[in-house]
Length: 110
Image 1 (cartoon, rainbow, N blue to C red):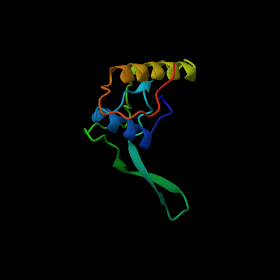
Image 2 (spheres, helix red, strand yellow; image 1 turned 30 degrees about the horizontal axis):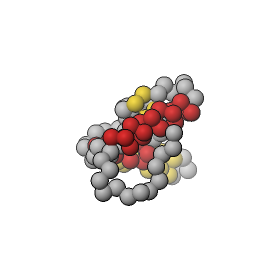
Image 3 (cartoon, one colour; image 1 turned 90 degrees about the horizontal axis):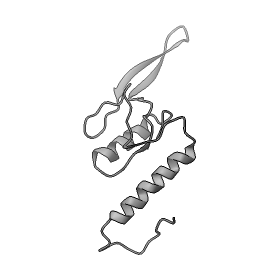
Image 4 (cartoon, rainbow, N blue to C red; image 1 turned 180 degrees about the vertical axis):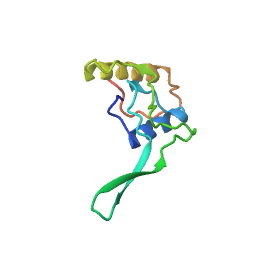
């Protein structure tokens, strides 16, 4: 994730985190936690009214705050750096996962 990650993507990431289902890698997200609705005025101009707020299942408001990652990769680093860090996290999770009951599905390559 990075500063370009906003709105629904932030809600999904925050939801996964609230449920202990994800490790977030990257930099702080944008913090777009509001829902706007355009309203056309009689003179033809349009205003945007905030009609809702995005919150994670845990009740965290994202607007103006965003989500801090679990594993920080500076936004000024190349995207490949975040991918390398994410791959390392996945390797660690796979290594730590119990194997009983897991299928023989695809495994991550080194």
